[in-house]
Length: 615
Image (cartoon, rainbow, N blue to C red):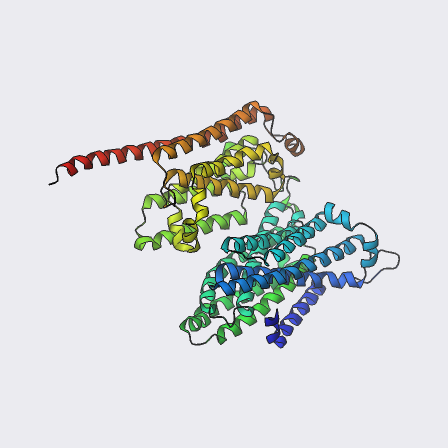
């Protein structure tokens, strides 16, 4: 971290401004430590002042770790530079782990209302770390960051660094998952928006930090800034959108923005976001142009350093906001305790018209759509077949409806809707997208995908048995391993299952249909056998639903929805809807493959007489 010492005055000023904003926001928001009352338990000033301060340092270490790993994965060019960035990220990860431990201890002191020494002597630390959500969250952070720190000492390739980056981004989410948003009226939407918000912030702030601190004197700086510019724009949109959603859930009424302390702090974050937007616009119009022209990097570095300062102050504001009680949102957001949202009695019309928006899902689907369209426009001068583009957008529309529409709303409450949802996410949407040859345009947008699609891992995964295993395993494991109820109870598990079903399904159908250029040649008969195997998987699922035990008995008992259908009869409907829709989709693809095979045979037959008559 010796690089940080080159400009100590600037960094000291940024740190002082960050803590000044933190203390001012704590005072304004009501999170300022209150005087001790004789006779009542109190954690003391060390905890009262230390906890928010350490939390800011903890968040700063997380941002630095993620930013340096991001630079090593996607921004820097040279192997030596990437190796240096990875090792530097390991040092910050150790600091992140240390601050997570301190935060855990101070949080225990705060919850017990005891000074740190007495809290440690109470013997509750182990129970707090393994049984209380806040303690579990920081224990997870500590373990993951220690793994990251250890892994950075190894010789890593692109895949290894990307995995560490994914782990680091994941490590910032557990504290958000158990924070104030988890107790909001619409807690699923609140938690989802907050997780997206935090992930976007850490990638955005961390990436800029890496450019200013670690790459400021590197020859890679112009190219790295060009790559980061697109990511920063996406992060700005994600942070603004998710922040607005989360603030609306917590406040409930626009009037509370200026009538409550919480609302005033939200306005402060909004002003900071507007300032950061101005910085970004200034970069695009002035400093990046000068940087790419090779004239000078000073304007960019000066403006970027000021931008990092604003971002750091915003971190202090965010920590103060997390310790400020939000206003009562009233009954406008009343919700079912387990579902986390209000759900009206089921009708077919509501299955179509009801919406269950999720910021993570919406932005992910929108990002895929934009990436596909941009890649299609770049391919061969924009002469991309319109039919393929329609198939891609139709598949993404199905995915969005299944994960943010009426099916997403009623899926956790009605098993037959749940089964239909998994058929749409894991089979219909991937099949439509595979018909659009998605890897071709995506490789135009994301160049690392080109090398990955031709490497040994891609060749192994395009083996028919490997692709089939990826498709079948989630269905076979999900119900056998008892993941059904956790997926209904936990937003994180539910999102993870959707991602697994969609990605494995898309890969399987891309291999089976063969519209994308892949490193392994597969014959038509093998492709049809792959689809026949997928039909067998869906038939097995139907048998499990028809002859197996009732799924989610305890979950549906706890829901106790008065309008819920009979569970046994509904599971029979689920066997027809879920595996049935998937089977019809696969059968249609078999027809497509058979038609392609007949067409190829006709072309060969037509060419043979012509070749025979040639002199």
